[in-house]
Length: 178
Image 1 (cartoon, rainbow, N blue to C red):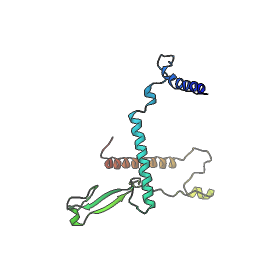
Image 2 (cartoon, helix red, strand yellow):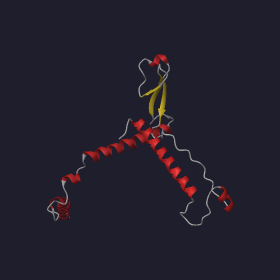
Image 3 (cartoon, one colour):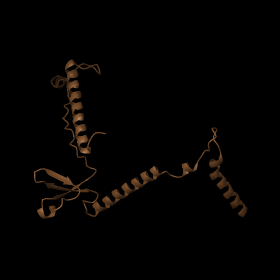
Image 4 (cartoon, helix red, strand yellow):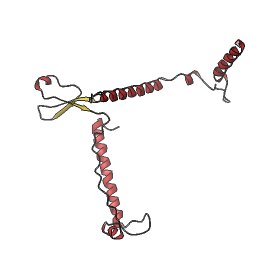
């Protein structure tokens, strides 16, 4: 029995070490030490994932225990002497005595950009409704009237304008263009 265990251990060691010594057709080994050991970027990524998981776990536990501010970013807001509103992660010096500093808790997972307004779509229920809604009754698919084509072009221009405006807002929020 002892001989069987020794033979199995030798086979296991040879099986694990073999790829390091066997060569591919191009002459390079099938496996190197770098393939086995993780690199720094991989370790950093795994650590960030673990920290994210840990913080989400702790914020979930805090909310269950009644602490609604847990997991949120604390921001201070006050009105400056010139009337403009100021925001910072630390209160201004001497502001405690003024009493004009407000503490705000912001959820980092909240979208701060206003969404697009969606107009309701009126779907015709009969042929008479289709004509009154401005929809052509041409039976061919992918065929539009000139009026509909003009409306589609105007809609495309409006969408492009909205995208450009949002891009400008994002650039202002992030401090410039990439």
